[in-house]
Amino acid sequence: MELLLFATGMTVAFIGTLAGSGGLIGMPMMLLLGIPVHTSIATAKFSNIISSSSSFVYLLKDRKITLKECLPIVPIAITGGLAGALLSDKIDPEVLEWMAFFFLLGALLLSILKRNKTEKAAEEHKLPFGKLFLISSYDGLFGPGQATILMYTYLRHGFSYLKTVALTRFQTFVSCLGAFIMYLVNGHVDWMTAVPFAFGALIGAQLSVRLASKISIKQAGILLNIITLILILQVGLRLFL
Image (cartoon, rainbow, N blue to C red; front, side, top):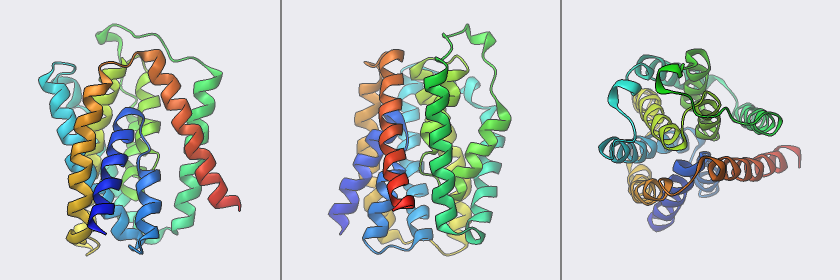
């Protein structure tokens, strides 16, 4: 099972870094293997801490973003992650899947109906703190689809694709760290599951972040739309059939 977890973690991180929503691949796989839902979420949070921090550090060293640009995200991401994790034991998993379905559907419709804004000058970028808090809360609560919604949000507020990837990975790291602490305290962490999954995610993230620099903003939008449509169909079929 460890090898399958490793391969799944690598696939999830590779897709998740480039277009988000890798969790909608990883979560069903872990549930299929008989891993309890809260342990599956905790495993995903741990792997995201490892993969997102490693890909963010790579982009930071490559000067695609500065730490100063990321610091305002910290308080909203960590409080959102903690708040979501606190609610996790009180919400039915099926309700969480419905939330993921409608969040993704809304993100795709917004992308189709209105083109992403052209990149603004750095000083004109405004972080939508309310939206970012809600997304981080959803990340702590469940997670699948979070990175895709987050990437849409940053792209629509004028950030370049590489900065969007960097900010998404940084915010994911912070919100997952807050959430994972709560899952650990509540006894939902199984290290025999979390470690091989996270190791695969680390490799997948490093591969994808090197590919990201070769993707244009137009290609990124197309990739996001394709991945989102596939995930909407996947979640929708599970919910409606």
